[in-house]
Length: 329
Image (cartoon, one colour):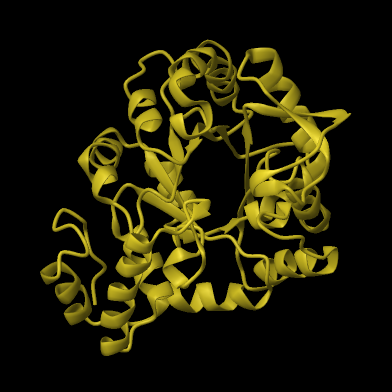
């Protein structure tokens, strides 16, 4: 993982879930302009997945990245789903995505098929990192452990072999809960190098991640890529929290954070990104955006000066855990 730390260098990457028309239909030119803005701003790590709009995000990302030398950037996608030529009515997060049917399958054969499809949509002949997507309770309910076992004997083994053969640099899980990552780190025959933890290690929500996931990852040298650092936009005043409607309790929490940030002249976006990357296990943070102007904001936020008094007040008010490593002023 130290090599991955060196490669990613606590970098800010670009998450592409919004480009799959998450929550809203995004015009093609706006989506492409957003990726171009990320590239022009110097971002060189891009994460995507077949699930994002049934391949739409991958196609949009690939249309831009395929114009650049493959050696100039890092690229990750996910397995656990592949795209069928059949169509279906869409609902939920990606109701406005492509209408192709998305098949959930963590077997070895499906993993290989998913990777082949992804590379074709991305216009590339190789991937750097691969995450096994959504083997967790929030997508599979009580049978998530059965899906995990399917992945352990399928996707995990395929990706471990690919890593050993030098085809990919590393693999892990891409999930919105902590338990699957904790479980994967206990495996001896198929150990992950890094995992993508979405929404779980953020300034708004991190207590559970600090119990086991983050300290175990640090101890074992497993990198954590932090996705969804704004918790689906709730932290910045949006209506969604962790891909669902924000509750009054969440909005109250955000209001308290906002009030303290305002008193100290601190951008909550800056606080969020710097909080998530302050932990030694974090190798990258990947906020997503569908608007070109947001890219520069994210980059500026990473280097913004935040006074120690701000963090101290959050600690005193019980809004962040005393176990969390904090950015240095």
